[in-house]
Amino acid sequence: MDAIASFVFKGFISLGILYAWTIGFNRPSKFRGGNARNMKEEFAAYGFPAWVMPVTRVVKISLAVCLLFGYFFPVVVKPVAFTLTGIMFVAVMMHLKLHKDPLLKALPAYLILSFNIFLILD
Image (cartoon, rainbow, N blue to C red; front, side, top):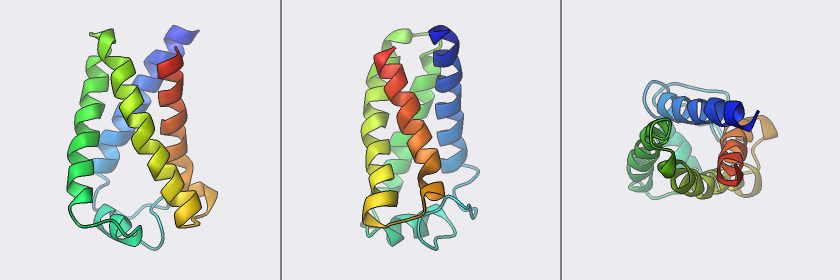
């Protein structure tokens, strides 16, 4: 069962991140923080400097691709999942603690955080 969950979680995490940071990047979403309509506005709403968003974009897309490589090279899964866990922990905290967004807005970040923790412990 763990092997099936691990297989599904790697795909969900990777495809979710790739969607959010490519196709969904400039699209409105009910999961955006504050009243942001796109990713740039969301990072601004959280008070990040302008350079943080493009750096985060490159890092998260790179990690998502590396996680896909984890299907063929399992040795990369835990380091990638560990790194994404840190990033997603910050994302959840930004939604819930610092910005006081409704729980629904933090749901994708929380799910990706939880799935990464599973991959680390698997």
